[in-house]
Each structure stands twice: as C-alpha cells, then as structure tokens.
Length: 125
Image (cartoon, helix red, strand yellow):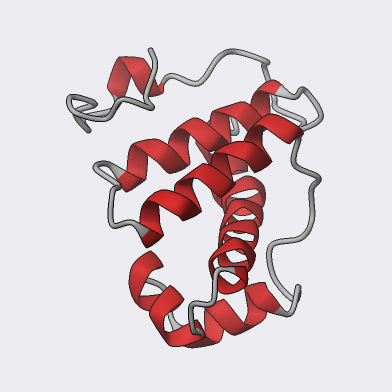
C-alpha cells in the first residue's frame, strides 16, 4: 500500500520546492540564501531553479498562491511552522484530484502528525 505522503515526498514536495525557489529568487535572493532558508543544498537550489528537478506535475492556482504567500513570509522572517505550511500546500495539490493515489482516502496527517499547529494562523484542520 502506498501512503499519501509517499506521493507527496516523491512528486509534490519537489514541485513545491521548485516553485518556492523560483519565487524567492525572483524576490532577489541568492541561491546560497535560498538554500539556507529552505535547508537544502545550493546544488538542489540550482537544479530547482533550472527546472532539472521538481517539475513533474502542474500546481493549481490555490497552491501557487500559497507558495507565493509562503515566499513572502520567508523573506519577512515570519514563518512559524514551515513543516505545516508545506504540508498544507501539499494537501492543496492533492485536493486538485490529478495526483493518482491508491485508495483516495484523505491524508491522515491530522490523526497522526505530532507537529503542533498552535500559533500558525495559516493552518486549518
């Protein structure tokens, strides 16, 4: 059985990161600064920026808007729970319905996730 988060890790998160890298670099940040902000290697940033990695699916308008908002918050140093923000965007992409999932059940994150959402106004359960 393939878990929903496996699809997220292999398909969706790289695409989100690629878009986030693009947004941050369009705001004038260097690849080195972006790599530090996202805790990924400069080589990864380069691959995302050159579209060699992370461009296998199309994101919907809601997800793109959320990525832009996250980029703005990252620049303003106003991100409380990066993991939850990324998870929320991943769920938005999955909700589009064009990602094949084995059983179609909703993400079990709210049942098993141990990351507290307190203080993160953008997380909704």
